[in-house]
Image 1 (tube, one colour):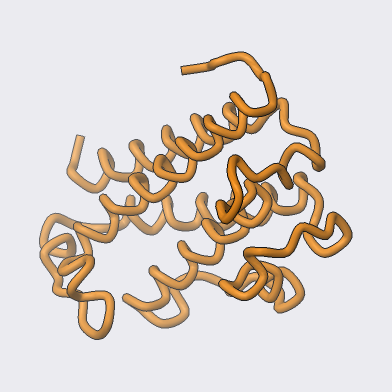
Image 2: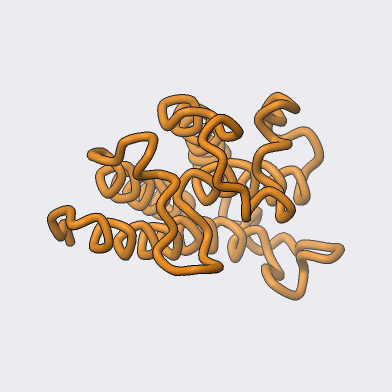
Length: 163
């Protein structure tokens, strides 16, 4: 297995763990905040989709298609405090967009050669992810960090502990 194949497989597996965590969430469950000031799962899911697009396009412009503007506008820092169920897309629509984005990122990672992983990142992201390899590795960590937050929401809702 090449390093890129390992990174792609890891991102696929973390995405699966995340979707398993949310499988029994209703649209209403997605809007539950684990505590005041924390983001609900609906916003976090959209944020994850938008973050993957932004991060990858920050490395190579046009690498991923940008989600429709009416989707993207729902998942900004300014909308993170919104609790209106009519404002956010339904669970299926958010997961569909994130699935498309994540699948495209996994496909991109699979194309990376060992030398590509060492390519430096420039601009504002360089301090956080100095190389393409760091970026590819960080993506699954980002998904898992939010999955941990979804686990807290599961407990608040009284849902079974999965992992």
